[in-house]
Length: 166
Figure 1 (tube, rainbow, N blue to C red):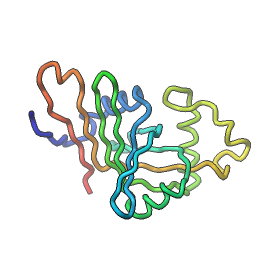
Figure 2 (figure 1 turned 90 degrees about the vertical axis):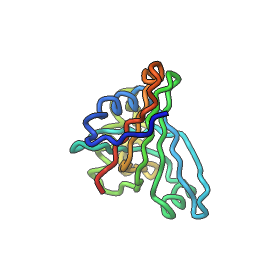
Figure 3 (figure 1 turned 120 degrees about the vertical axis):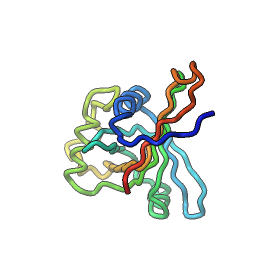
Figure 4 (figure 1 turned 30 degrees about the horizontal axis):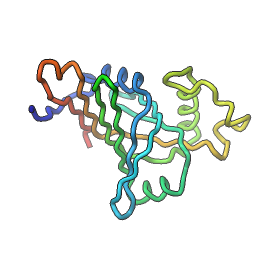
């Protein structure tokens, strides 16, 4: 098996990143608690490319567990898998978006028609982004890794990896 080979520029994998996250839609997101125990859940983040780098948004419940986990450690792992065996691993720093402009931006992304957006945002009523149940998680990736099923057919297990310049 070949080792991961870092990608110098995200643009080399941006098209596959956007295509796969949009096709697969749901991913497993894992947080860890203050005692380093993982907890996974399924979310529907929407990722975009901003200034040449990935950024994600998730509308999710602000549960006591998520709040405690992210307060203890803001790093999360997002894992997309398709039955075709395409995978995208995204390591991020997560934070609750409190800025009105960011919340409006997330609203616009999720108000887009399915399958990537939700389309119907009427559950938040006339209050919209001010609804007490409207919580936005901002996902700032620092590492993305992609492995395509078509590589398996030729025995290539090299994962394309991008890391943010931190």
